[in-house]
Length: 326
Image (tube, rainbow, N blue to C red; front, side, top):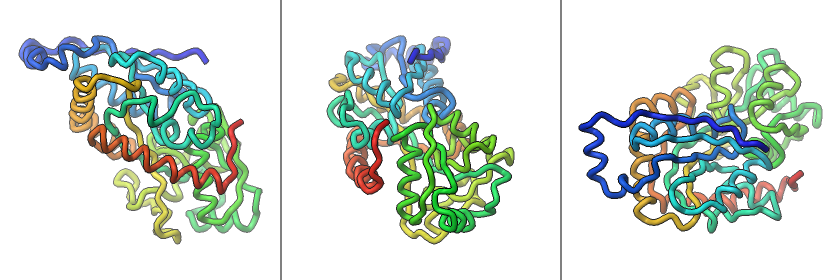
């Protein structure tokens, strides 16, 4: 698939601020052009978060940040290309639960290893999944939706951004927990999947809030439940799956920035500092909160530990659901 380039450029900082930046040896060694790969098409949650953080990094670092969308195979195409890049700090990737934790159990010939092929830099955000239906769908709430699914097994369908995508696997987890059966309809990315739910061609989707929240606020989509342990501040009237009869249910997506394996320690420290600084900035905090995302600043080590924990968790869901790649 031909990559889509979207440059995010910021002017050099004012003289006083620039002098402060030059005083940092690590920052003086940072690339002047940074490619931030989004391994999915434009318009999905990963893309939205990458643009918010990329714009702020450009400002802070006095660099040009180029967003490159390179979708395919639930993010594995773009991730595989990043894994083969030189670890020089010029290329980063906005990874997420799908590329870093789910894909190893879906694709037997994956061209990268999520543990060995990347250097984790920083977790960016946790994002609740939201179960939504078209405004005309005949179910007013989550319990009514599940009752309808149980009454007519296989009658309802659900959309996702692709076979093996995070939205596919989290819906599979929902099906397992609620003991329901619905038919999966895979699309080439989250945006067309959501479009068909909006148009009534697909019944529902359970995916990250950034790609859904504007449609929920406009009334075109009805939110039935969220996957987080607590209700979302951005959608305070929408119950959690846990409080709707399934205690302990949690299936948030998470997003973080990685580099090719072998990135020098000074650049790892630099990027971790700059990403966490960006997450603390008012504009990024507002942008993420507006999309229902929760900023999650952390260390590279903690991010690596999260990836290692999540791989076996989702492997079990995939095994039970007998999910296979296309």
